[in-house]
Image 1 (tube, one colour):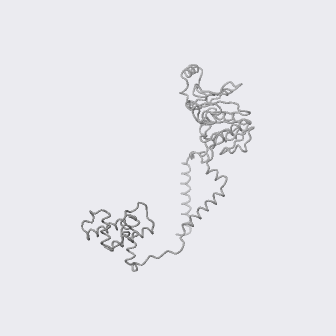
Image 2 (cartoon, helix red, strand yellow; image 1 turned 90 degrees about the horizontal axis):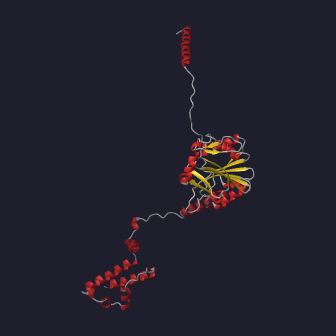
Image 3 (cartoon, helix red, strand yellow; image 1 turned 120 degrees about the vertical axis):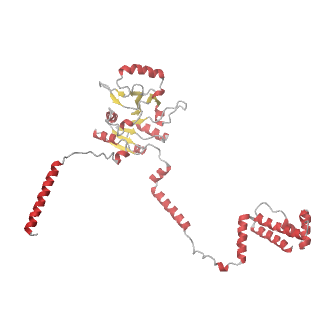
Length: 393
């Protein structure tokens, strides 16, 4: 093929490709597709991450704390502490410390965690019990009270399942979707503000010293998936306004292991190294291995000694000594018929005549065996007496 023909062919191919590309581009239509990757790991690890971001967007300082040690550096004045952590293992000292922090001018916001137990006279929630706040199931309320409240609110309540918070100088209340299964009761009549649904109270607010305590029946309204519903976000802003907010996620008392790890990490590391070194020292073999004994050098005496050691370990001293005594009696019966029918003293006299051994040695050999274990010297001496008597028959 000439150079001219090759050039023409190349131009034709380019033209065909250009026309094909133009046709395909004319058929393409742009579109948008949203691919949901789900929540980020940060969102999964914090149920109240959206609440933190919302507060910061409102110009409120919001920080996160992982333990009650934050009280060491957290001032009371101008601070709101959202106690969102489980308090099942909280100690009385920690509860008193929280209330003292509040009395100094702080705002403590906590969640009622346990129901009031009438029989025990407490709920087990240390903070609630100290404040005189009792939580009940809504269906356990007095039936007459529930019926009268239901009749009174049937026509007036537009949204009986929602909690309404009325503010001064406001025409309409704020609506919050608390769980209506729970009801808060102020047994000491200390609350100065509250919020109710049709049949239950879900928010109580009371003064404590120079500070303020807000108790909610449940915290789910501020979790990531629910904070944008109704007036949930507004309520969070309202309770935290004009203060810095700290969200506390862990309020359990630390166990001994965590305290040691936090305060003495170097000492624990040294202890671990010491234990490893001790185990290594105990596990190291000292001296060379003994080579196995050659089969050719094993004599009959070694086999007998090994067999005797095995029987001694397996059967015990009394079994071996009794076997020797029985063997002596068996030999005596062969030499003196009717030996087994004689009394013990007569048997010893017959053995003396047959062996010509003194009575003391015969009695020493044939006396009943003691129940306690013999020492090595006594056992050897007893065996020697029996062997001498048996060999003399």
